Every structure is written in C-alpha cells, then in structure tokens.
Amino acid sequence: MSQFTFKMPDLGEGTVDAEIVAWHTKPGDSVTEDQLIVEVMTDKAAVEVPAPVSGRVISITGAPGDKVAVGSPLIVFDVGEGAVENGGAGQSSAAAPAAAQRPASGAVPSATPVPSAMSVPPVTSAPPVTSARHGRVMTSPANRRRAREAGIDLSTVVGSGPGGRILRDDLAAAARPSGAAPQPAARAALNRADVSAETSEIKVIGLRRLIAERMSEAKRNIPHFAYVEEVDVTELESLRLHLNSSRPADAGSLSYLPFVVIALTRVLESFPQCNVLYDAARGVLVRHRAVHVGIATQTPDGLKVPVVRNADSLGLWEVAASIRQLAERARSNKATREELTGSTITVTSLGKLGGIASTPIINAPEVAIIGLNKAVERPVVHHGAVAVRRIMNLSSSFDHRFVDGHDAAAMIQALKELLEHPATIFIPKVKSK
Image (cartoon, rainbow, N blue to C red; front, side, top):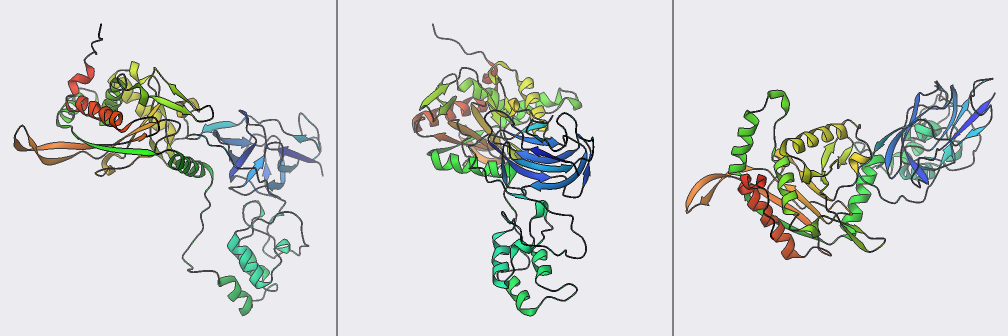
C-alpha cells in the first residue's frame, strides 16, 4: 500500500491553523484529484479544499469544530502504485491546493490550535473487535460521562461519527455483547444524564463561531452609547414611490437603505470623527476621507457585512445597485474578501421586521453603526394638527470612548433633517470661503 499524507496547507496572511467546518469524505471513500474533500475556515476566509491526488481515504484529522495547525497531517490517502504526482508515494505535502476562498464577515484572533487526529476504519453492520488506541478520543462531554458511569473504555469504542467521533449509539452498541440487548444497568447509566430525549447538541463552528467571537469582543471592549431618534419619512416615501414608478420593472426598486447611505455620506462631512477605525494595537484612530459603508446582510450562514466602497462618490441608483449586488453575492457565498472587509461605518436594517427600536452592536474596529427600524403610519401632530404620517426610528450606537454623546446626537439629528426633507440630500453642499 502506497500512502500519501496531505497536510493542512498554509492559507496565507499569517494563518497558523484552520477550523474544520465540514468533511465531504470519510475513511474508506475513494476520491479523485480536485474533488472537494473538506471545508475549513481561517480567521479571514472559508476555504474549500480539493483532493491533491486520487485514491482511497485511509484517515482524516479532526471533526467539525476542531482546529488543525498548518503543516499538520490533514488526510491520508492510499494512492496505489504510480498514483501520486509531483512528490511520489509516501511523501507528505504541505503545499496549498487550488482552493476557492469565501471570505467570512470579519476576523478575530483565533485560539491556540488544538489538532485532533484519528484513523477510523469503515463502519460495518457488526461492531469490529478493537484494541485500545492512543491519542485523543473524539466525543462530547455528555458521552464521556455516560461512558464513565457505564464502565466503558472509550479507547476501545469505534466511532461512527465524522472523523471517528463517538456517538451515543456507539456507546449503546459497546455496552452490550454482539446481538444482545443493552443491559439495564448500562442502559440506565447511558440515559441518566439526559434531562429530555427531545434535546440535541449543536456545535458552534465556522462562520457562526466567528460571529459569536466578534460580537462578544465588541460588546466586551466597546462602551456603547445608544441613541434613538424618530424620523418622519412621509416625503421620503413619496419620493421613493415616484422614482420606483419611473423605472423599468427589471431595474430593481429603491428601498430606504440607499437614501440613508447617501444622506449618511453627506452628514459625515460635518462629523468626520464617526468615519473612523480604531487601531487598538497602536492606540490610534484612523480617520478616513472616503466613506466605505458596510451593509449588514442576513445570509443562510449568518450575518455578513459587504461594503459599498466610496459611497460618497456614487449616485442614488449606483448605491442601490451596489447594495443589491453585494447582498446577493454574500448570500450565495460568492463575495470576495475585498467585498467583505474595509468598511468605515455600518448601516443595518431588519426591514419589515425592524420593530420600534434596537441597540445595534458596533462592527469593530468602527466607532458607529446606524440601524433602520420599521416605517409605519401613525397619527402625529404635524403643523399644529393631528395627521397620519409615516414614521421610522433610527437606532444608533457609538463608541463612547471616541464619540461624545453630544456629537452622536447632533449627527443623528442632521441625518434626520436630510431624510425628512429628501430633496436636500441631492443639493450640493455650499463650501464656506
């Protein structure tokens, strides 16, 4: 048997490890060169890793959620005689494959890599006789407790889960002789830790883990100052409907979002302290002249923030088209790393689910985020009389270390003024002499 060991490739930009997101093969499977074998995630991007050679999978390293260090064995193939190209049989490869990268929404420092390797033979209908093995046994804490209480040595159990992970059914099989029903004492021990048979465990991995870490870091390190303002968008709604009616049906309709982005770029001319990134490592505020607006976008994988670059130089329809295209690319995992990084301020909207008010979490290292809530018709006092007007709240959060409360409120008031009189959004600002 000729073996080829493929190591975790160096995915660039100082990456020291990568997290296993999903295996697309298992021990015993036959794969062909360039076939997708595993998805991994670094702090910068999700990467689809293809097979470097054709052959049969002997063993894999790590279960979903585990981190494997760059240069550590990732998967071992039986390639057969003459099946290995560019390296020869039995050689190890740490070269990066032609992987397709899908950026994640942001980056945070990763934890110390904890590689876990296990070689697992194909699972058959009858449990094979196994000897004790060495190294880390992959299973959940609950299963470890069940095994301990049932007197089961986990090193002798063959796991049927991804990467040889030991599941509860594997413990149940190990607790009884071949063909026999589970013993009452062992069955009771296996079930003792369960509060309900209706519960399940979901491991936090991949993009969801990155989102959780970024949100926790932002909330822990940034003293948020929240400010909510009511905005009368009756005139803005009238303008929006008029513009939409004048466009072809296939041109895409305007929402409130592009108006808010354009108005925001105008407002930031007077409040440049909010178009800033905080470099915590150097203790420096990096103030930007151009406005790169992040658009918080819900995707099947979680929240991503594609970026409308140089929004201050774009027109209304250009901003609307850019938002639409970026959102579609983010949801279909086609957005590039450049499209998902580099924002200087973020706008978020829940659309029709926007509620009355919210407290958005700042997209670090930015210092401000603007949230759009749902627009509804309400009776209000307008020009001294009760009238039905369309009202929408703006919910904002600011990094109170660098943006004073007065400046934050003044900025939102300026944004409110433009949105309540939308024609002024498009009037060039008169520069003082």
